[in-house]
Image (cartoon, rainbow over the protein chains, first blue to last red):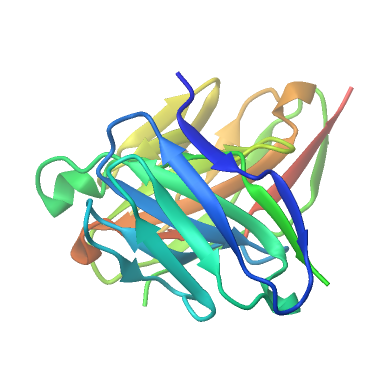
Length: 119
Length: 114
């Protein structure tokens, strides 16, 4: 069971270049997320998709776009990379069952991350 | 808004020592609380959770009790091992935001020496 798979694992870009980070999950989860992890700041939510066909902004959405391609896949795009976007990016998914109360009890399942450096 | 504060690291312990990592939270609603662990080169994985006041979450010898009166969820383990070396994140998920926005603490790095 692969869980959440992210590609690529590492990437170096030049300022102004674009790229798409890919994420796929095989757990039949409804909800998917993109986070960035920076030293001393924990994880910050970039975008999330509560269910197939919907996407919403998180805490730090500027400079990013997302696509929920289908139930399994949720991609993150950097249209014009900037050095401030150097970070480790994590995709996560979770099951959405029942009410908001029960849903909030569900843990998130994470991929192994993409380490992105922008020069 | 909701927030999570956890003790700064790194925390360095000898094998078999007692571990406490402090975590406090603020939330306007009724949060569920989590501890996640991150091993080098990997993503976060759930360690334990508690969904209401006075619940105790436990897993792999780790424990944490949801204390509403002190808004805390401290992580404890009676005897740590070298293999417990990792970064630990406290987190909350508030049903008032539909559970979609999990708030993470900054993480506490633990080193365990043999």
